[in-house]
Length: 264
Figure 1 (cartoon, rainbow, N blue to C red):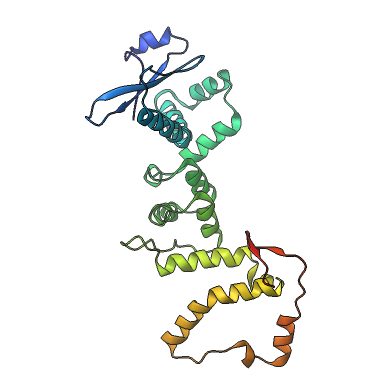
Figure 2 (cartoon, rainbow, N blue to C red):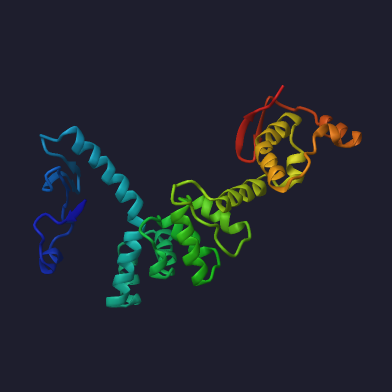
């Protein structure tokens, strides 16, 4: 996608224009440029011969702009400060009545080293990294982990909050998440459950469901360690009674952020 003013006016020409239209064009299959739409003060203009493929690409451009507008604004403010000084930029922001939360967000993003602001990450990723109280080298490591493991901003925030000072290992070359990544996901899930104590307070059906999901991992552990399995029937009678005495309070139960059907 290429963003350009209609006829590439000079700085002097732009200075006399209150709000120039934004002309957006896309490359076609032959590598040329075709206008898809024009943003104006009153809305949007599209060509009469707009095709379905161009329309789809147009929608994609709005998604792209929404994803990148925060980082673009932050970068533009950063450029302005470097060239004209912070006082000048702040006075312009005030005159143009920018929302202060948006301005603070830009300054938060700009507080990250440029090397940490990877193209694959969003502005929300940058905000998470900037506000996590990490050292620069940790920010860089976590940024790389977010890219390689395809972590959403919320996942990145939770992974950092788990308490590890080092990021989890990334995905393997095949695209399959590594065992370290699985462990990180497990730690995040367990924390949302409030640990084993939280799981013990769940309904019996929900506990059984968790046990069923953990069984393959448990069996793998036994095989690798040559250990003997411990079944529920091998537990002390008092322990079994305590597990089976959990009362069912509803047909549905929220299990650590997800809704599951309670087992009958």
